[in-house]
Length: 137
Image 1: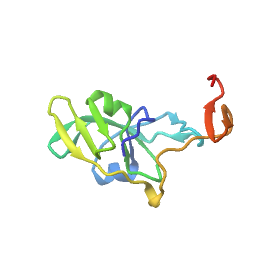
Image 2 (image 1 turned 30 degrees about the vertical axis):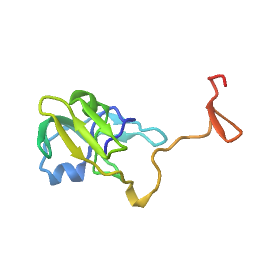
Image 3 (image 1 turned 120 degrees about the horizontal axis):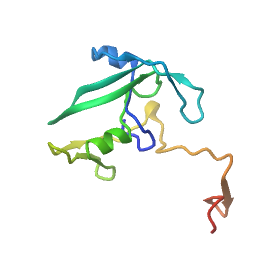
């Protein structure tokens, strides 16, 4: 999964073991929004990743996740000059070996959502519009 809201690249321990990746033990914890702090299992440094005709080294943080085996975040997008083209269902990598990869937009368990917002504090609802409370209308 490619996620614009995530800073780093994540992989589950199960998937890392399946791919026979080696990682350094992690001593830190990660705090995802709206979730309890989770321990970082380890860090995979500069492992080669291949997507169709493209391959390059990438770093992963090994954590426990329920929904996806791998999440590619902003670190991947910026480091490898990736342009997601969601309306065309393509991901374009414009770095040293330009590649166009056909993508699929899907959600775990058949969910029909694109993103989630926490609507507790900081938003005002007026006439079916949501406004950040700090912005004037």
